[in-house]
Amino acid sequence: MTFATFKQDLLASVVVFLVALPLCLGIAIASGMPPAAGLITGIVGGIVVGALSGCPLQVSGPAAGLAVVVYEIVQKHGAPTLGVVVLLAGLLQVGAGLLRAGQIFRAIAPSVVFGMLAGIGILIFGAQFHVMVDDAPRKNGLQNLMAIPESIMKGLIPGDGSNHLAAYLAAGTIVILVLWAKYAPKSLKWVPGALIAVVASTAVAAIFHLPIKYVNLSDGFLGAIRFVNFAELPGLIHGDVIMLAVTVAFVASAETLLSAAAVDQMHSGPRANYNKELLSQGVGNFLCGAMGSLPMTGVIVRSATNVAAGAKTRLSAILHGVCLLALVAAAPGLLRMIPTATLAAILVFTGYKLVNVQNMKRLMRYGGMPIVIYAATAIGIVATDMLKGIMFGIALSLLNVIYARTHFRIRTEPHANGRRTDIYFEGAATFLRLPRFADALESVPADQEAHVHLRDLDYVDDGCLEALTNWQQQRTQCGSVVMIEWQEALRLYRDKNPLGSYQRADVVVSGASH
Image (tube, rainbow, N blue to C red; front, top):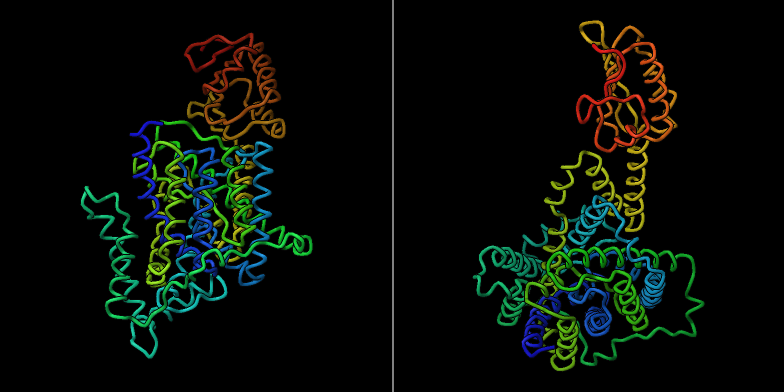
């Protein structure tokens, strides 16, 4: 490592630290956990996972995508159970990494991934909208969405509480985020808009002594760590805990590896080792679980910031964790001055961006089914829970693949001259469709030319090819004309057809001249 590389990594780490700090605090609060839990995960994600990572420029920490899952765990089972769940999820990830299953998590249809992000974004938006007005989130995602008009009224109409003051501060935060993203000077683009918003709103709250809710961070940072009692661990593990661990491991792994794939496209350095990345995430989540903090993933926002800031090695991720540790150890009082409404506004803006309209436009290029899968996944997550929504999306994707591999359509069109019949085959011609395939060929009268169109076939197996060969031989022996139009993928047939003579590169003509 050269001094120039070290300098670049150091500068990048400061920028990533400035992005990570408000997100660590906000995600912890959104998860129903103390702010220190988010900071612990950020520190472990930076120092430990950064050192072991299979994707050197990826930055790990608490992710907004898991905030909804964590909140439900904390509300239903309590914070101690969360530690057990995250610990087990880490072990599952370690096992998956050792079994070299990293590539499997990448085999998820984009429609499911985008739907998952949209569902998460909707849930975050709905829950944090209430926190923006110093109100409490409702019990589930649907109730949060239905109660938004109530929170809007609390924010607009001054009352006895602090709701309207928090709402004004949150609205100002979102305005700063939007304006900074669009109009920030080029020389200051590296400064995160979230940091500008936090500094501005904190200053306003401090100057006017606003009676609103602030970050609750104790002086004894290490005292916030709640180590799991391993002696009691067997008694805490049951069916529900295992299913929750599977959910956390699955979502965290998918988000991490998709983020790693995106980071690979942003730079020309070493490519990601997905199995090693999965293993390092497992180690990080095991440690976070053992300390009773939040689960972690590779986070695309911090990772993209890291690359854009000019990071060269994994040292930038490690140093950003060191910066987090130094701040909470040296100046916890500064963090206690930050209004929770500001952090909630940042997450509302994050949730809005996760519901990315551009993703829907990209999917529309591939037909209607990807949009259906996208919507079903998002709605399933909002209406039920994360794992069920994702499983529903994956199930629809598999059904779509099965349909694509089994869909078969035949269209027969007699020609206007009465001496020719065109047969169009579409989809997948397999042995399961052989009776229909053969019947369609044999339906052409012997005194007519047969034009067989195979261009729209996605797949054809040897059973249908053999039937086509036999049918063609029989017709040509009787002096009939057979004309076959191919697509490139079906040239295998030509090698099996001894009677074929070619008029064009993609047309086979056999039998009597016409």
